[in-house]
Length: 88
Image (cartoon, rainbow, N blue to C red; front, top):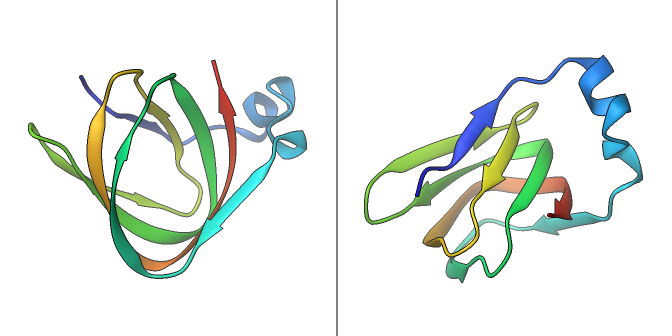
């Protein structure tokens, strides 16, 4: 299971109505997480590392991220994260 990170265009964000999605935020911390559904999100601010059994990725402001359903990981939030999110 791979986490997909893209740098979206403004047009893409508008087409998906990203700025109307709910916002989630968290302070620097480390915690385990499991995705029962596929989540897509747009990082408004912050920096985090996401560790899975297969990889460690870093997400930053401006990233559009897709977390697949069934993924278990550990979030390591380095700088406060704010993101718009949606489940598919």
